[in-house]
Length: 385
Image (cartoon, rainbow, N blue to C red; front, side):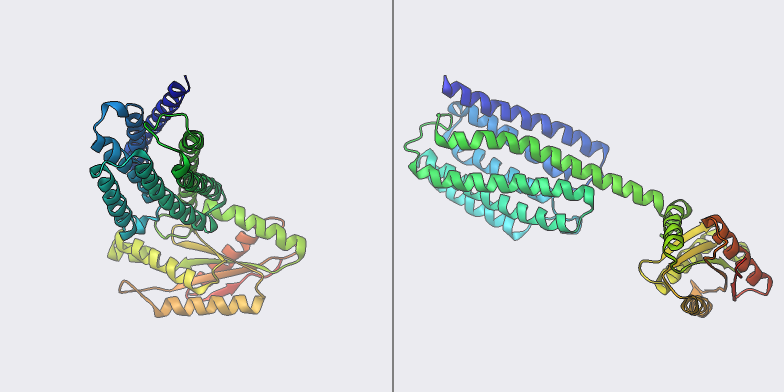
């Protein structure tokens, strides 16, 4: 009765792996930009086929049972690892080839000399354990540099691959003492170790991986929604919450805060003379020049058209003016795709009469237009009301 139970558990694991592999393939077709998911789909299907072959091993040849099925398990774990690699590094490397060649050669030798199940099983489990350790280490490193949402998924994945590695190492150590094994479906200590962990790994790793994909896609969507597609800086929508937060903090803690409004002089003439495509190139390079001029954590946003907003927190007034003048001079000295450009800038420092960010932006805007009316290519500072 227990043999039937072991077979049923392996069959159930095969069904679970298959049901996970098929949705992963569908997800791959619908979201082709999701990195690595096709590797996981193939890995799940390989596991499903391998587990199913284990259940019906009595109907398979010694070569298929001893070599092909075990290589399917090893290849599946490499597939999981492959799907978790960073995009630029996602390629078959020497480690993968070495595992496949060495494990494959040993398994083939055992099949040819008619060695029993324990040796073949120990070889496969050792190879899978090595790959699992490598994957757990890789995912742990990724967790240290990922966002909060992805970090949860990476920690979970690290746990599941680490659990597999520990379990398989234990299984390898137990195998020599397991006695003669006629079939993998026997009620042995080995199966008591393997079957629950296989099921836990299938479900846990799949859920964790999909959660990581979801959080990555959500983060990318959020980033896309907050970035101006032409210039690569923040858009107005994402600027306002950050500006309001800095405004509230500056008011509460009496900290310096300055808003700089920048407008490209005579930009309409550039569009009319050189075309809108050339104008877009000028804006993109202007945004890059602005970003290079400020600190890494300062806010730069495209406010609309050829207008940009720079938010400088915790910077004294004289330093703000000096930075703004340097930016103006740098723009004037730069050829933007062969086109000369000047900018007008208006600075507004937070004051007691500013009740909201609208007041601060309005004063910066007024100062900027005053600079334009004075001939452009200059900086104007708004007076406190």
